[in-house]
Image (cartoon, rainbow, N blue to C red; front, top):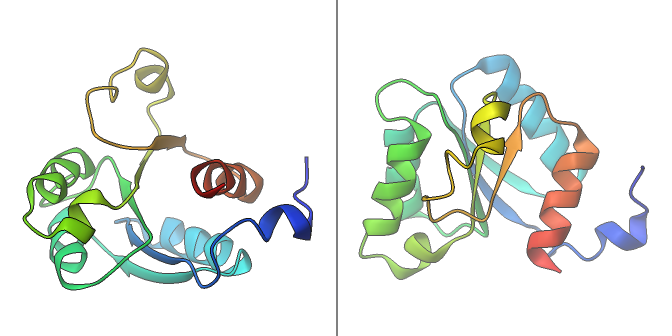
Length: 135
């Protein structure tokens, strides 16, 4: 199912997204998908950098890969939510994971996140997740 332009207009204009992804190919893909949806991307390579960026910047959405070096996405979610900066600690967070079985079994249900995207995901799946979040 392809999204029409009217459906995508439900997304906030100039959506500011922080993405933490350690794989360079995955970084290119998500940057392309998000920019094609009109978003402005800041991409970092690990959870530690994501926590720093979340506290220093203002983002409409944070997308974290579950498995990264230094600080993984799960720990980064906990650190961001525990922060004193209200904008960062309350920003919506999506978790990216290749662990489809874990998602199905509720492995991430305890996290204060707004959703998961299972890798590999399509542009349409990402757009639908964003539309559900911001509509």
